[in-house]
Image (tube, rainbow, N blue to C red):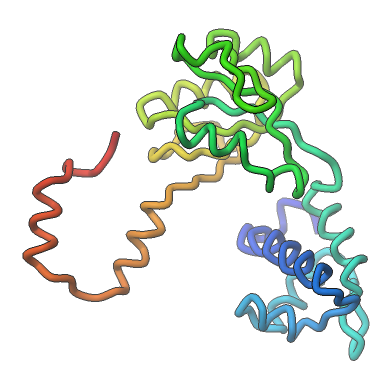
Length: 226
């Protein structure tokens, strides 16, 4: 089975398995059953076994999975048994928070470069980073051989920035901009827009007070975009 034969939904569950296994290891567990892993993730044990079987045999029936070994295998499968350097564009409030976030390095990722177009931010030090002028984006990405990018710009700038990053050799983008990017099919793009997830939740929350809702809508922009 080749990489392209693996259903995207299965690929999407692998990082969840890895994260849960890391927590289990921190708790001192040396083995874990598919039932216990499933209980922690609200996924059936059969589904977990089916997913993992696409990549080989990792455990023995009746004894469960060796936690440390499965962590190593999942890191290898996800190619996070190495450190991936990333470039961040957009050093506003969100960008600064991402630069300060320690969780990337613990999971195989490291922001190496930061860019902005604001003259007041260019040259400014944010933690260990010196904010660079986005005008030299392509050159800097190529010099550092960056293949992953993080976009934390306003929606109005995101498409142009994404295209420039792709032209410079970036093959995967994590976008916090509230807009869908139009890029070549081979470019891997993931979106993080908290409002989308909030709107999914409110769909299920039932009716709200119509008066309060109408008042809130009257004060909001039509789509709540930047």
